[in-house]
Image (cartoon, rainbow, N blue to C red; front, side, top):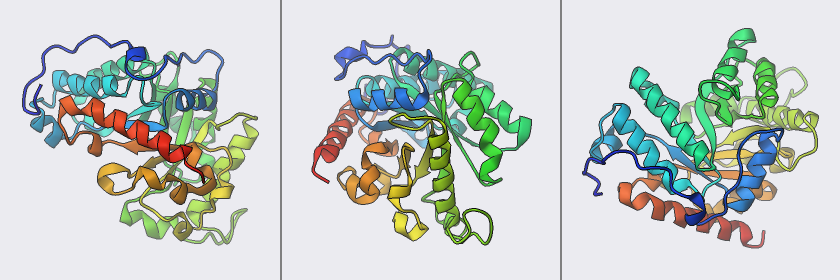
Length: 315
């Protein structure tokens, strides 16, 4: 279909093994999120496909901002990612904007991703204290819950310790969290580079303190190739400017938005993340949409190939 043609009914989920990669079981069982994520990256690629149904993109694709349009958009991205990417990341705000219909479309998108063997990180950026934070985590991560995402994004700016319940809920459900640490929006820089005046991280930047807290959480969680608690570190940033030493990241997986349309290059992975480049999930959304719905699969395949080439190159 062209970029302006209304799609027909959502097609069945394709066999992901015909899409460029082997099937990887993502049912949680007793496996932790970090173990499942490492397996998905190893068998496919470290690509994270963002599912961002902007109103303008929906309109350009001839889709409405309703259940049918959002479901069709999600299906296009999921089917392109199947067999090629480790994980997909629906931006929940774009679904929430359509109300109940948006949540029904989100549910269909997550189910389709799960059936296609993809992990799902819900980009919700939640963060609260006590039982409120715990219930946010249950809403998104409970293996028997309404969405049962594999991971969610969270904000630590009520204090990293406020996330203890969220992390516990995640681990109890074989799920993970990605903690905002150094983000690319310019408004965050003053806060995230501020130097802590007291506490165990005194003298370090706020962002660097979060990186250390996450690394400690993963050490406490046991020995595995990737931790269950990850970091959000923008790919358009210089980590040194935020006081972050890549060697302090430990086993934390890194969700790295900013590739593609925002300017970061896959070929610079090792330069950007140093010794932790192989822990990076290369997150891209807008750059995969530029050729319309018919071009998404080819762009996803291109990014997956480029990531493998970049990480295969000598450090």
